[in-house]
Amino acid sequence: MILNGFCRSFLLNPEGEEITLSFFKQNSVLSPHITRTKEQISLLNYQALTDVDLVEFSAAEFLNLMIENLEIRNFGNTILVNELIRKTEKEISFASLTAKDRLIQFRSEYGILENLIAHPVIASYLGITNVSFSRLRGELSKGE
Image 1 (cartoon, rainbow, N blue to C red):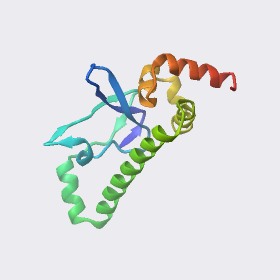
Image 2: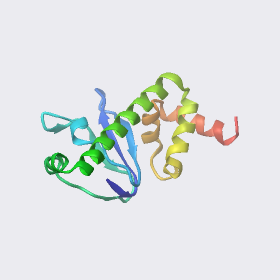
Image 3: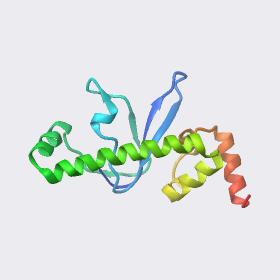
């Protein structure tokens, strides 16, 4: 869980370019172990984008606690449901929104982050080139 700051999950495409999959902000939980690993190897990379304070715990120990404690089991299940919702919402936005609308949605969700991190990171998250991102920022600043 992130107590303070921002980080991202990303992977490398076949050309070796970083593709941002998700952003995580204060009071959010990184993708659960079960959703990001295969054969005990993480499929994702994580990067702190600002100074971050994290709470870290063993996935195996957390699983044992979920078995023993109903409240922790409900918490773990809520994390999984929220992960599914977040991924589904992003998939729907890619299929149904323009790049401009995705940028507006990004700003609504992450606010100040656009002013704190490198713009190519955001462009890759939005599924556009950095040039297109700069153009859209210009359009939105003019109120178009």
